[in-house]
Structure formats: C-alpha cells, structure tokens
Image 1: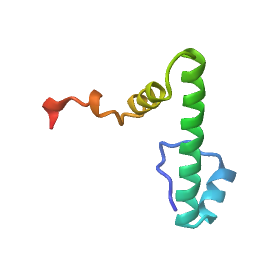
Image 2 (image 1 turned 45 degrees about the vertical axis):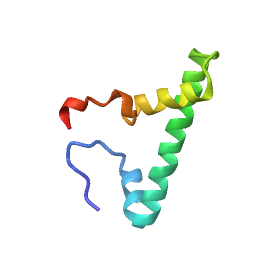
Image 3 (image 1 turned 120 degrees about the horizontal axis):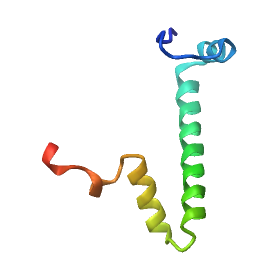
Image 4 (image 1 turned 90 degrees about the vertical axis):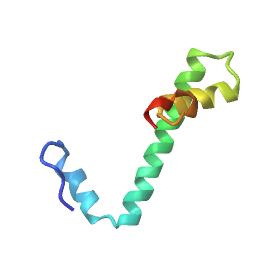
Length: 76
C-alpha cells in the first residue's frame, strides 16, 4: 500500500497499515468513525444538556453532512 506524498504519516503507523488486510483496515476505520461519533455526541450533550436524543442525532447527522434537511436541493 502506497500513501500519497502530501500525507504525513508516522513510519511505524504506516508499517502497521501495510501489514493489515483490507478487511482489518475497514474494521479499524469503522471503529474510528464510531469513536468520533461518540465524542461528537458527548460534546453536543455537554453543550446542550436539555436536547432530546432526536435533536442530538439530527445535529450529529448535520455535522457529518448526512442531514437531508441541510442539503441544497437546487444542486440536485
């Protein structure tokens, strides 16, 4: 696996990635995404303790660019 030259990556981390199978890399990416969502959820809950779970989920989708209400329908 080659990495683009404009990405700075630690040599040890690059070696770990090279030795992973495609499936392992996908699973690691999924775990990182889940961790990012959990951190985002905690941050939103801290800033908006009165929000419902639905409001929190909507804000997460909005911040991740996955909120259908925030899509510019003129660009479809």
